[in-house]
Image 1 (spheres, helix red, strand yellow):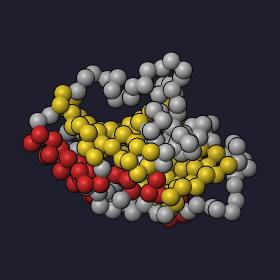
Image 2 (cartoon, rainbow, N blue to C red):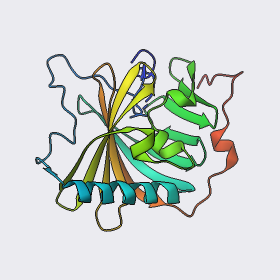
Image 3 (cartoon, one colour):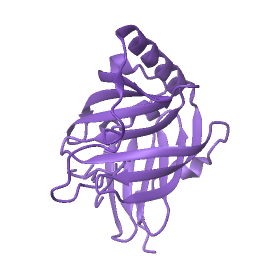
Length: 230
């Protein structure tokens, strides 16, 4: 949850408040007794890469992330309890992002470059946060240097992908740990998982990624005056 949880990514992202992947964007908390283990960690154990290879991986990750100006993609968001939510992700740098969740999910997350709004159409609520509080800086910044803007915790390789685990201490609710997973062939970002300060875990997997399509500007507009009642 983005709120007290990302309440979560949604602050509740990202949820009962959210999963944004804090993530996400919204966060689905684990069921009682469920292991506090990320979806990525539950996969086959990855192998830690050598320091030189890790530096190369970080350099390639920065290059890919900084090459993105716009992005349109389908996504599947998986909470720690195994529940899945699908939707469409729209991104335009700097700072503009929208998670459109497919029904029956009532959630909608919009970043307009300054603020992030997490809306729940079912409850007719909207929570707004500073964009600097989100754990998705790696997507939102015009220019990211993972080694300087975050703390690198680990770089591992498994099969045809490389995972870079980072720590961000400036997110809502405290420190977030994020695992970015890149496809080795072109080092494109294929998924990420966020473990927030409250221990909640959310994974977002991308598919049908389009880096050429330019999203409509209206997609990133936050309505501060009206809440949906549908």
